[in-house]
Structure formats: structure tokens, C-alpha cells
Length: 170
Image (cartoon, rainbow, N blue to C red; front, top):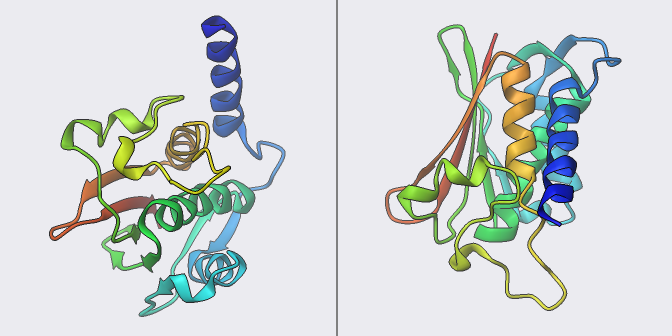
């Protein structure tokens, strides 16, 4: 029922907020984490990692890996590939994950962060047996990023595709 789904979503979001409360906060090398994600997704040629220098933040590595993994997985599923770029800005670590898929309608860019919300039919995979997920990944990813003092937003790319921009304090 809808009430059961709401309870499940609240539980998962609570997990995202507390993910790793038992996990110590340490220096996390985002550059190494992104390289590892790119090589471990099963399609290394589909993930492009553009690195200028090493970027590290203080945080919980398992939770941050889950958040970044969700962004990369979504780019692969809906856009056929992912480009990961971690530019450094003043006092913030910025990770951008972009794809060349159909993007999202502007009115969905914030809505897809709500539990059980998925993008429009244009981003739904057509492969047999692939249901495209539960609609919880982005909600959990944003909860994790916010728990680290950061932000996670989506925007359509000029010329097509979607970009997920995660900012964390250095």
C-alpha cells in the first residue's frame, strides 16, 4: 500500500542521513573514488573521468561512494555514458557527472529527488527486464550529500543530456 511505501521510503532516507554514523569521518580522496567508480562499473569505456588535480574532502567514504555511484549509474542507464569532472572551486569540491541522454523536463529537475519519483518516459530504459530502479537513488544520494554539508542539483545540458552537480565543503 501507499502507507507501506512511505514507511519504507522514510526508513531508507533515514538510513541515508545516518549512513555510516558508525563509519568514521575521514579524509576522502574524491579523485581516487571517482577513478575506482569508473573502472568498476563494468563499462570502463562508458565513463570518462577528467582530472586536473587531486580533490579531497572530510566525510564518510562508504556513504560518499554510494552517492557518487548513484550519479554515475544513472548517467550510464539513461545517457549511455558518464563524464565525471571534479573541478575545485573556492572552499568547495565540485563533482559534475554528465550524460548525453534526453535530459529531463525543467519541472522534473527538482521533483526527481522525491522518493519513488522517476524521470519521464524518455529516461526510462527500454531493455527487457530492466525496470529502471525504484525512484529512491537520487533521494538517498541528496540526503547523503546534505549530511556532509553539501548540495546536489540537476540541470539540463545545452545541446542535450543531464548534469548532476555535487558540491562538498573542502
